[in-house]
Amino acid sequence: MALLELSAAELMAWRRAQLAAGGRAVDLDWLLDLGGGLRWSVLQQLYLDPRRSVVLERSLEQLAIIWKQHLDNHTPLQHLIGRCPWRDVVLEVSSAALIPRQETELLVDFALQGLTRQPFGCWADLGTGSGAIAVALARALPDWSGHAVDCSLEALALAERNLQRLAPHALWQLHQGSWWAPLRPWWGELSLVLANPPYIPDAVLDQLQPVVRDHEPHLALCGGHDGLNACRHVIDGAMQALEPGGWLLLEHHHDQSDAVLDLMSQQGLQEVTYKSDLLGIRRFAMARHP
Ligand SMILES: C[S@@+](CC[C@H](N)C(=O)[O-])C[C@H]1O[C@@H](n2cnc3c(N)ncnc32)[C@H](O)[C@@H]1O
Image 1 (cartoon, protein in one colour):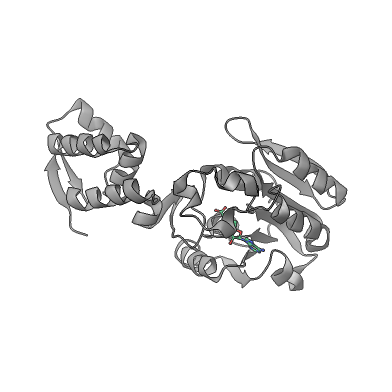
Image 2 (tube, helix red, strand yellow):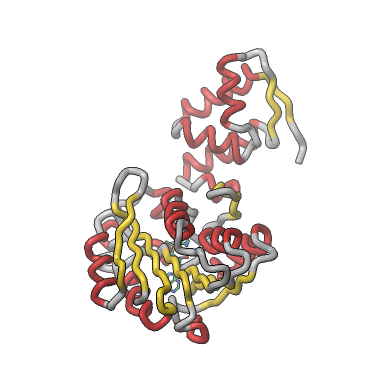
């Protein structure tokens, strides 16, 4: 990739001009970082020392075209750049799958904090999308075997590229199909299952920001009338698919905690617990096979 040197003053003038056209500074700085290779910390130093020069991986003209596409069409910058930082990796992303969200990093943290002490086990990521959760589990648990499931072939192709690049030596397999169905041969053996299923209620879908509603796959968003269709499928199969003592962890919408915990208890799962996001909102549910 050609490196382009320019003065801090030039960059700052360009930045002001882009923001005058619209958009949020935080997004433009994200573009400079991921698309231009200008780390945010380096950008901050320019305010203190405007005589410095900087080196970019893309020209300002190229970055301006991307910014305009983002402003004109609400296209997510992650789609335009094709990459997204998530946990300790940079994932390839596309319109085939949900852009991995920061809160889902917490779902993985909860799973890895104390639930994975056994040396070997079998994990699954139901509705893997970009493969974000599967990549994190495969990297953290290289001696376990893992399964990533999605019904979308396009999403699975993306997940496969991310797993091959970021967890090439771990034991993982991809499966196309609906939730637990493709894992039937492993039913009763799964130690740790994570899912970030589609959970947006139908009525809320139209109110989402265009950057989400018009660009992310509806298969990854639509949870049906009450948003819980996919959660129900996943929870309904857990008693059959988990091994005794195995864990199920789910991400859900901000107002679904009570309903999801009830569904887990009704199925006979034990140690049913909620977990909160960084704002203190109950966004995760976990439970265990007896
Ligand atoms: C909210 S996205 C989560 C993607 C990824 N796990 C993440 O956290 O970024 C939900 C995923 O579930 C998949 N999905 C939807 N219905 C499904 C089904 N019946 N069986 C398997 N996967 C499904 C979608 O294709 C999508 O990739």
